[in-house]
Every structure is written in structure tokens, then in C-alpha cells.
Length: 273
Image 1 (cartoon, one colour):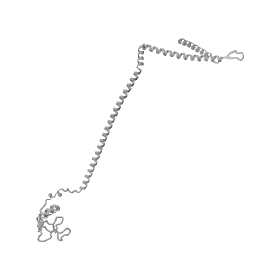
Image 2 (cartoon, one colour):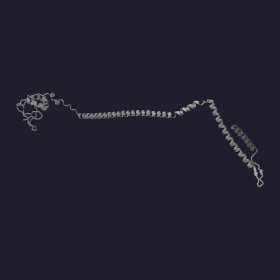
Image 3 (tube, one colour):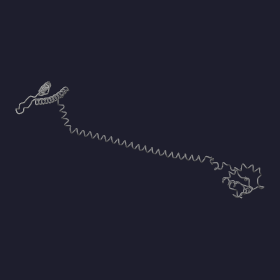
Image 4 (cartoon, helix red, strand yellow):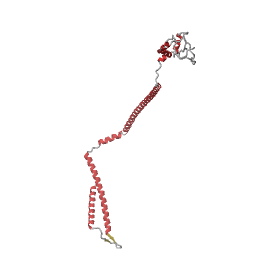
């Protein structure tokens, strides 16, 4: 019979089977060799080394032999150490929380990748902002430079225009300077006296005009009084005096004011002459 896939060999109870003592001695090694033979390479090496005559026939898979209750090792098989099996030695240790840890690691990796992308995006934005700021500063510098040049040109044109205007009127300016140099200079006292005389004349004129107005008013009042004091006759044309209602002291006062006004008018006329 062929050997089963698990690498174990089952035999029936016969005279060729080992004694119970020998079976008990190899029980500890049997479990290790079973795990070692799970590797196809180790199983092929073991089959190549052992004798074809000593290899026991095993039933096919799925057809168990009745009465089989022991698992034995074929005598003469070579023991393969576990550390030679690379797959068993490099296999990571099994941990109950391994899926969760891997998930946390993946989440951290995703977060770190997203943060790296965010940092790169921020650095790119900062670089663009710096470039824009540098461009704006350069434009502002150029504009200031252009404005300074324009201001200089305007000042130069203004100076040239002033020079041209001065050249046009230079003759008139020279004549005025000559006249000022030839005219006699007046002292401050003379200027003050002249101003005082002008002010005095203006005051006299104002006083004369006021006196004339008062004199005209007085003459008008006298004329009204005279006309009211006379009575006109009918056919004979004789004028009769009518008694006035004005007191005598008021009449005397008015006559005195009239006399004073006439004297003042006469004096002012003499001053003007």
C-alpha cells in the first residue's frame, strides 16, 4: 500500500510489529518526525534513504484499516532537525491580536502617508506664496523707480518752463530794478507820518459829511417850524402869526444847536480851503 499524505505509516498487528516497549521509546520522536515529514522535501529525502524492502505498505487515503490504533515510525529513517526547515523557522509567531495590530499598522501608515501629502501640499503652497510675494515686491520696486524717474522729468520740465518765462520778462524785471534803485528811499518815520496824514484827512471828510447832514436836517426843521407858525390870509394875503404849541426852552435849544452847527460847518470849510 501507498503511504498516506500526512507522512505517518500505519501497520497491522503481526509478528513483524515492534514490542510495546520499543513503541513507547519512540513515541516522543514520532511526533517531531511527523511534523518534520510534513515538508515534501524532507519526506522525499527520507524515502530515498530508506530501504525499499523495509518500507511498509500503507492503505489508500480514505480507506482506514480496521484495528489500526498505533502510529509507528519506519525503522532506519533519518531524523531531520527542525531548524533545517526554513518555512517552519521563518514563520512568524501566531498572536491572537495579530489582525488588529496589522490593521492599526495599516491605519498608521495611511495616516502618515496622508500627513506627508498634506505637508507636501502646504510646502508647495508656501513656496508659491513666497514666489508671488517676491514677484509683487519686484513689481512694486519697479513702479516706485518709474514714479521717481517721472517726478524728476516733471521737475526738470517745470524748471525749464520757469527759465523760459523769466527770460521773456527779464527786460521788464531789469527796468523795475533800475527804478527801485533810482527812487529815493523813505524813512520809517516819514512813512508813518504820511499814513497818519491820510487817516486824518479821511476823518475830517467823514466829520464834514456828518455835519452837513446835520445842518441840512436843522434847516429843514427850521423851515417846517416857520411854515407852521405863519397863517396864510384869504384874499388880502396878509400872514398872521399862529401861536405854537412848542415850549420856549425847546425853541431856544434848537436855535443854539443850529448856531453851533453853522459855526462848525464854517470852520470845516475853512480847513478844507
